Length: 362
Ligand code: AMP
Image (tube, rainbow, N blue to C red):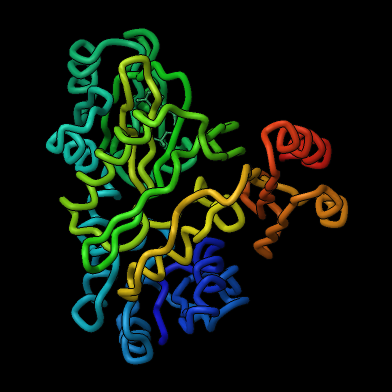
């Protein structure tokens, strides 16, 4: 079975790798030549809105998916007229616009930061007086890794923030006080079956995910997260893997955003869970039974940002698994990741310390 993947980044690469034992072969569309996915499956180099390229993919593949959320909704909708696209273009549209996304959370009763759309400096000032300070002004679209965001700490910051981001669709959000950042990787099949991985705890540096590991959390927190996950999956009639990013606050969980795709905070599932998020995404979209999401053993995933560590030295750490995406180095770029597995918490901590000695982020 051939599937089309719009986007051939590292997520597409890992999806394609997971597909091979299942008899699923990936074909990519990505405007960047020699994208990471092209090491695993043929890549057509064209714009996402290139109808001829989409027509060809539709002829070669029985269904389509995507590996990043900024795929134009029009391209996904065009393809959907020819072959099934999972998750649906409608789910994609919700995740591309922070206002729609937060409105959906609110409609479903999922707690989220106070927010208000902003289209002028006067609206920004009004939103600040309603929501209070500190607050964050964000672009509604195309924000990632903390880009397109300005913090406002005093009323006088409005002018500078508007100067920096004004002219685009914006949203003002109240700042949430949280203990830690968590994410829930959820999966829903074409028949409506659902499954959830244990919550992941995520640490960022300079807006980029650095470390992700199954969270040490009370079962009640997992139950709460899964309730929110289920509400979202069902409302969107979702098919595939979805990542829900959450703040862990004193009064419970607060949703920040969701990604309609496999997610960096689920990479540890490759070696750490019975079935990886990549395999489960493919199982979901290909109408296969979902796989077991339980942990195999203790694990943690560390991103390699800007530079890759020495592979041989990493592999000398017991339980280390090296993932090189084959990308050229650039500061702030995710080039690969290392997952460490261990039989218990203290050996995992010791292995993480060994790994830290080898990693230099840039
Ligand atoms: P985002 O692009 O929305 O994922 O934001 C990037 C990071 O900024 C998050 O991982 C949080 O650390 C922080 N952040 C975003 N929104 C808020 C908020 N409303 N309150 C507090 N921190 C936030």
